[in-house]
Length: 132
Image (tube, rainbow, N blue to C red; front, side):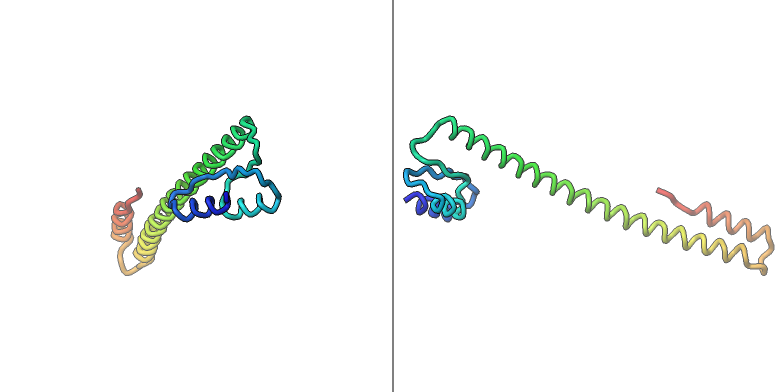
């Protein structure tokens, strides 16, 4: 029957194939069973071609929405990865700047060195700071 064909199709194909089950024996139970087995939709004979076209359009739209959602998810993952790398680089740069500031404070507070020499050493450290 149609359910057996649906099951065989779902087992055989690696690629997701959308199936609309068409049957002369329509019942809620059969419709639910078909959907659980992977049918995209369910129609009763005799087929109304307008309804079939509407259902095919609906399936096509849903597939397009899923593709867009997956594309957005991938783009978000890339953006998140890039943001994490940028944050890590900034943290390392801030750590280096903080270390240099600490060294400058130490030099400027060292009274064993004359004031002019302290200023010169502090300015040398400031000149070595690299900002991206």
